[in-house]
Length: 399
Image 1: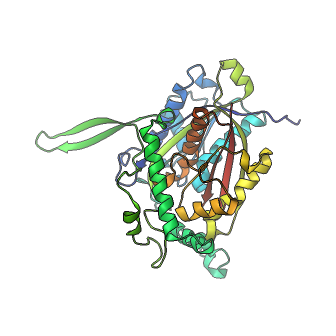
Image 2: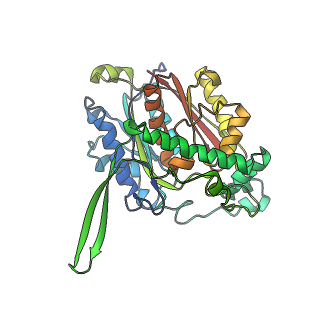
Image 3: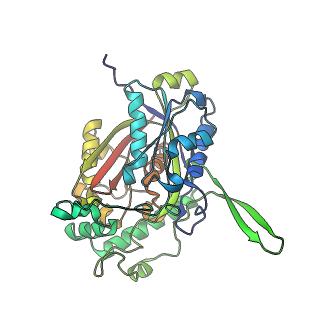
């Protein structure tokens, strides 16, 4: 029996502050606990909703092992106090994992299989390093060298993009500085306040004189990444981080980070049943592949695909959250598609705000839906490049 496609609405979207890894404020906070904070923050935003109505939770994580392994989605659902009836599924599409989780949850609603879904993402790059604790690449990759780019570090792929799309070191550093300036300006205006659920950071240290453990609590409310002390001179002095004669540096790359985000999506029937007010409508989602060695250019293919699926034009987008994995790839995408720089990351991006991998898609979804409402804009997009050569893009409409 065929089902009619119905709309999926976001009624809550929140995130934790993003901490710097591996020595930031969230370094000792487990990623499942970060996710619990985000889930509880999302539920607090819709007190009318019966948590027992949530049918499943889909959570993104780029390296689901260690402290964020053993199906972190289901574990966090239970730790957050949701009923046993709420399921949990962890998904991985690297940097787009959180956005993929939102899209998958929306699809369950759109095809009529669910009325209330929880989506999100979590990542602690302090506790689980890039590539995980035991990376193991299939040796066949090196036999024919057909897809050798799969083994490239992300920084090397950014160097490839910078060379192929002729993105200069100066342009990358200027882009990085703008990211910090926009993020600091947004923090100063309190523009992140609606989307952030603060984290209670617990710090334990031994008191040798008293033979006891001292426990301190402090409230973290802001992202740690934005730097007021950065400038073009300082950025220009940084050495290339991935290639001896390259242009990609720590200063014009995204920050390794810790954080989580959560989004609650419902059907129109659930809106009426629980008397909920929608923040946004999920419109479309697309993924496209590109050669692994230039993975950063992925959004150039995913963005047009998502627009076609939505029946919209690029000019219809009022706000674009383009994840700044590297300034080189962000600039290449902006230039290739002719995106309006003023619409791209108006409150800064991952270079300043951080990029907790599998959580970023959910985090930037929260940023987008609240920004659209705050500025009374209609359409927005979250998009990013993805390791091994992919791009993802999701479109949302303010209601």
